[in-house]
Length: 485
Image 1: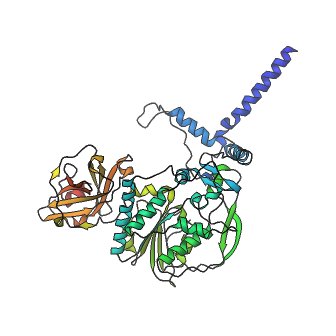
Image 2: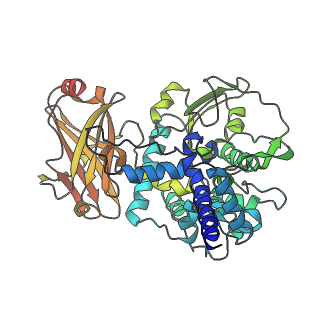
Image 3: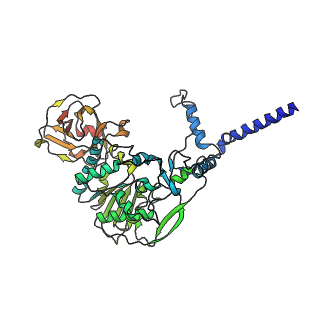
């Protein structure tokens, strides 16, 4: 009898471990995580590196691979999320916050909501400088510029956030609104506008997605049109239908394909696409409506997807692009376009990581008392490359030279005189391979450079005075740059 019991226990234990191991054993037959999760799956790691050496990260990478692709993954994730949301009122995914009345919020927006994310005085002034230079360029080209930050969902609907999260007194977005107002840079305060427009019957954001819905996009579009002196779109709401699969819901329930409401409008579009349109996520989309007037160039992110059909309906020519950095030279391909930058609130810091592609504006060095060059301190340096017809100069600036508000210039000195261009106060994180320091970035047209040899130096002007920094530039000529960079 004892032997039989021992055999039965051994069989039960074996079956238990086989069941536990099944998801891993069946991994080769799994299709991986559903596409709804909108991320790249970990690939099976190589035992050796490209250099032929043992891959010391093999087992860490293998763990990531198995976590992404084990069999029944989507079903188990969904069951876990169902239990946590409906029983414990918490999230089964660290990227999703479960709110009240079935509302979901993106966890990356939490620091904006609570005030945990703040911006330094220098960072705020640098954001304003970036938008100021863009505004100047667009106006010089005969267009109007508007900055349109898209508020996080919990900035518009804080009442549905869990009570354990206390909203902060101010956010980066609030600080930027005030700074742009002081500098006279055109922007739209959608946070206040959408809060005032909220209808209790039909929300302006999806409950199970991080973006606004078609109704919210319609209100935003009409606000943009109003600022551009265009007539509003009179499109009556027809109905709502559960046809929209939310990004947040897909993170929690990858196997359930649950749908959210979407708002539809009773009108027949009259615009046509002139680009090879595949989806609203295309990098660049062009459209035309011969019955309308005006041109619009919009730099946007995923919030711009729902804006696209409304904007296209009211302009003769439109160009939407998700490409980063913002390429302002696209204005040359259109007829005097207005320019809109739509950027999600949680990504406002991106303004300081990639400088827009546009000619750095010329300033007049002869009107400034430029001091003699001095040796560099610490981190200060300059890099150069030729990119899209520009000499792109970028680099880092040590805190030793910076105050809370800085103007940064590139000085070109040759036998024919001096040229001075204002640079963006942007640290090119991707090009430099690091983050979080002071920096500069300027695109100088190659056809504007002196033909002979010239020197490049950096000038910083702030509350501590003006300083010229030596040892960061290069003495070259245009021909050498074109042939060697």
